[in-house]
Length: 151
Image 1 (cartoon, rainbow, N blue to C red):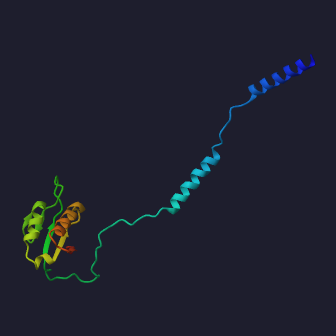
Image 2 (image 1 turned 90 degrees about the horizontal axis):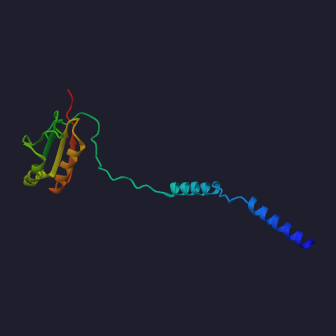
Image 3 (image 1 turned 45 degrees about the vertical axis):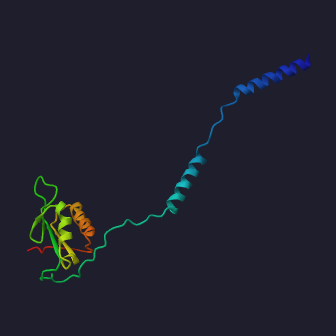
């Protein structure tokens, strides 16, 4: 009888322990630490490549040059209300962006030596870059930028 009583006690103790057992929990602190360490590692080990750009050689400070440069000169006016692009003048002749490439190709070899872009303040960079692209396609390697002196 005593054995039966002890076995019953053991079973009741086991069943109460099973009932008292809590669900296992997962500690998030070590996982967060690992994530932060990985984040710091990747931030430190990442290298950034420089963005390609356009190299512009600015003239030295001093008096502006008054003699007319040799080569093609494109003047771009500020866009008027409702227009996206400004009016372009190539060597005293109004041209559209679509005509620019053929004009560059048909220019004399001396004129093809250099292209000077003269733009006003509110001209979009996109328009200037389109002109530069067409000039490069036409074989013009030297591109300069001119500024109109304010009076």
